[in-house]
Length: 334
Image 1: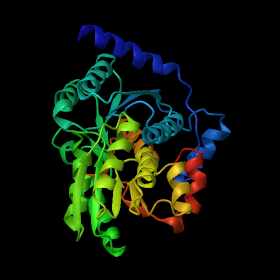
Image 2: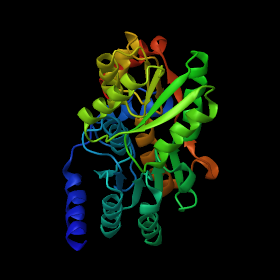
Image 3: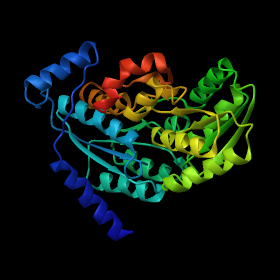
């Protein structure tokens, strides 16, 4: 434990040396701030103290979704004159230890995900006991307030699942395979439960090892071969959508593939009709607004949401919208 916390502290400290980059074309004040930052050649657009904020997520390695979250956070950090530290671990206990390391480092604010809230509760409590404001993002909207977080920024996963079920009803689908790639992730369970709640047909869950794409593809292919009545596959992350497409082809299935989350590949496959639709929760916005919320709290004691989650989704993206969003996915902001 001690050795790990020492390593984690070093890793967080090392993140200070990373350059912050990116730009935003969103409208209003944010676009103006981005232009001001660009004009200042990456320098901040404010004169507040150079606070240090740490973001600790449950991301595994190579997850493009979290690259987008991080990109949004880094852009806001440039604007807000923030030293931004990013770390992640898919193992909940190790993620909690990374939070402990940030507390030990006496950062000025912490952004954290609560994919496995029971494992994170004590770490979040230690941060708050140390007087460090905490914002939760993406996962844990139901637990955020109870854990004492300042705000939660993300989508309500149950509502997002219900939106998928409603869309599938419109498309006349009858049997759905909901593919969960991370066992124990409460948000994933809520998504599939939401689909089941609003969908008029049958929903079956398929648990796969999301860290091994060949295994994911094999499991999906086997299921589609054995049950020809499955007419829809719903994946819970953009990287898994293309794998589902390959499994569908190899299985000789005609099932529609739909997915949560958006990236350049998903946008391209929506545009050409390979995928049916995607559910966008705007990860760039989650990272950006989390940093902004902490900055506003430190600067002006502001808080967003009034105790309720600040929703960044869901937004159903179909072929009609994909072309307009593709340019943003290619630059890593959608």
